[in-house]
Length: 249
Image 1 (cartoon, rainbow, N blue to C red):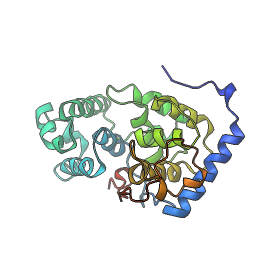
Image 2: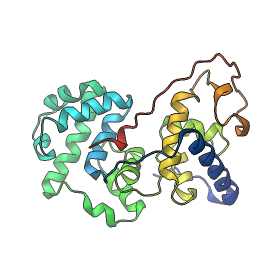
Image 3: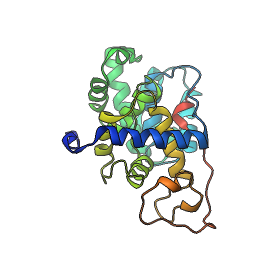
Image 4: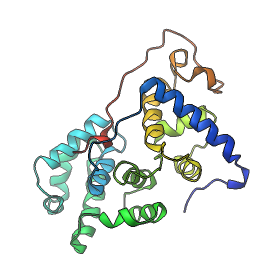
């Protein structure tokens, strides 16, 4: 069941204007994020995103490479036992859970004989989300990453960083990331989703921490309405610009 906000309560133009302002300031500060030079395979992004759940991008990438460097095709991975796959992806954490989800996807696709998922390119965004979330272990966030990072649709996935920063910046506040996703899904200005999503993640990793955020150094300090700002200029920031889902090749 979709967790969608009541569109009748939204001042669409005002929110879009705010999103565009934030996007402009972040792009000026970070630059416009580069997408992968070539379009990434939908199944690569789907599996990479499953591996990324509840861990950092570098560990997810190592787990992904453990599979891609050992096996030439996903068909070979589909023939692994759950225990074998768990061993290969353990660096990403939650090995049993992630192996089950990955093998579930691969076994279903093996039955159809088609690992390409190229038919997704022709479907409307909502139908892609419905198709992918029908797989056990694949939620809206994971499916939306396929839309953005492989199919290059103007869709903004919502992880904990995006959900937190969107709330603090006065765009939309919900404790439910899926509800925030559907809000942005219906309102995102054209063409900016990749840049907006990527730069919000960097902001959340480097400045807008869950606790003790580095507000004094934040590039959005002047326009941020967050009431519990930490203005201690000695608060340490972090640097983390590796984005897993633009590097699955």
